[in-house]
Length: 172
Image (cartoon, rainbow, N blue to C red):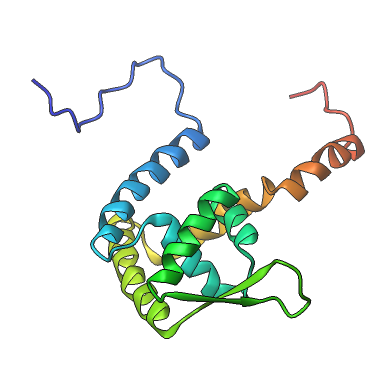
């Protein structure tokens, strides 16, 4: 009997998997490892993403954080409320007024984020152990370009760019 964790051999005539399928599988494995590691710090992956974005951006709104984390604004509001109650973030009125609140990391939030970062570093160390430094840099650059190409703004431009390309050659 084979180990259920061992992938079955592909059929000899099977096409290679799509890159997007491989990226999806990798993302699911990373997410499972990250969920487990962050739980030991009392964090969720969405909470970690919110804290990490707050370190990078100057006081985004919870709606901004929801878009970045691919969750609904309602779900992010629950995450923000939890992070605020735990003293990891603080919210303050936006200087232009209105209902929007600006969210910022607290010292406790930054400390928690750094501990969570070390857990992600450990996961990446295992994942990238067999990949040398130049290939890691190339992988990061390639994934960044792929993500940028699928950004909503880039997708909106794609039909315009395609219409400006010359027709494909009939010759191989």
